[in-house]
Structure formats: C-alpha cells, structure tokens
Amino acid sequence: MTTDREFDAASTLLDVPDVQNFRDAGVGGLRTGLLYRSGSLSRLTPDGAQRLKALGVRTVIDLRTAAELAVWPDERHGLTYRLHHLPLVPDGDGSKPTWPATQAEAYPFMAEVGGPAVAGTVRRLAEPDAFPAVIHCAVGKDRTGLTIAVIQSLAGLSEAEIMADYLRSNRNLGLDNGPIPYTDEEGRQQFAHPVRPDHLHAALARLHDLHGSIPGYLHAHGVTEADLDALRGALLS
Image 1 (tube, rainbow, N blue to C red):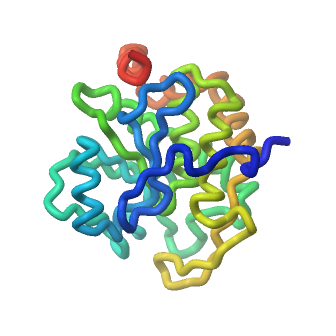
Image 2 (tube, one colour):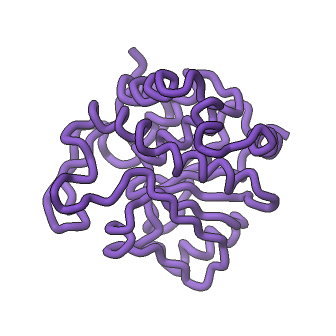
Image 3 (spheres, one colour):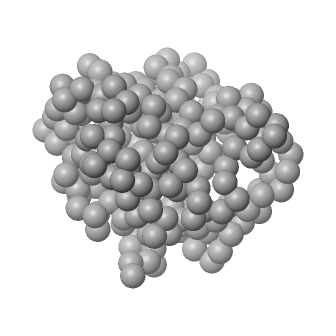
C-alpha cells in the first residue's frame, strides 16, 4: 500500500507565516499558482497576509463549522479576497458530536453530508476571476483533503497523483509519527490523526455508491456541466 513516506512533502509546501500546511494543489498536469490548500487563516500574521497578497489570492473557501469560526475566525490584515463559508460537516447540536468517533467512520460521513459544501466550492471556483483561490479547514488534511481530491479527480489526475498530494499533510503537520493532541473549539482535548489512503478511498467509494460518479455527486447538489467545464478549463489551460 502507498504510504506518505514515499513522497516528498516539501515539494509543494509554501511559506505563509503561521498558516499550517499551506501548499499548491496544482500537481500532476494541473496549472500551478491557481489553487492552494491549507489549514485555517486564524493565526495569519501581517507578513503572511503580504505573502497571500503576493500570490494574488482572490477567493478563500472556509470549510469549517460555525462553532470553529466563532472561536478561531480567519485573520485578513487588510486583504480583500472573497470569502465563502461552506461548512462541510454540520455543527453539533449538543446531543451528539459533530464528528463520528473514528477517522474510519468520519470519511464516509463527510461524503454523505458534505455534498452541498463540495458542490458549493466547485461552483465558486467556476465563477469568473475566482483564481487564485485557497481552500482550507482547520489544518487542511481531512475536509480539505476530500474536497481537493474531488477537484483533482474532475481535472483528470490519476489516483496515484491525488493520493500523493493528500498524504503530504502527514509530513507537513508532523503526523508522520502518529497522532498529536490538540484542544477543540469547545475546550476538549482531542487527537489529530494521520491521513490514510484507505480513509480517502472509503470517502470516494461512498460518493460513487451514492451517485455513481463524482460528476453525478456534484450534479445532485446543483453543479452544472458548464460549471465543470469552467473549472476544468481554468485548471488545465
């Protein structure tokens, strides 16, 4: 099985001060300098903002929940990009957690509930002048990982290319040696777990189970063929 140790994690990593896991998602045959992926911008510094400005960022898509945003809002430092909040998973209602108990359960769950956010992301990126764009969640590995994998698949990347990009998060976040503790938005200690090929495979398989294909999944949530053509044209031209 493919592991993250087979890939150069630093090859697409960019230095944006105090933004975790910021890297160019333009791998394989995709254009570089258009689509970036990262952790949240909640600790973005003025120097980091200047870096984003130099990259020409016009659109930021935040996949976090409203509860996360309330505790850790993104910093702008004068940047004027278009911000779209598209939570990929619902906020907890107090009676049950937002996330399933395990990563193995979380990935099919994301596929099941995340259709509106993933489709919304595709529609936003299909708009004129959307790029360069940043897609992020908390640390840029799970919600962002699935969303980027869908976009890269639409653009024709191979499974190996998609998986290589996905697995770079482990080295970038220091997860290549195992889980790391963190405090969540409700003050509880949790553990960030490494990303695994079988988890992404499970999410993508669930998309196919639900709608037959990734385009079918997106069409079911309002994405048009014109949207798909526009996105592919931007990333591949």
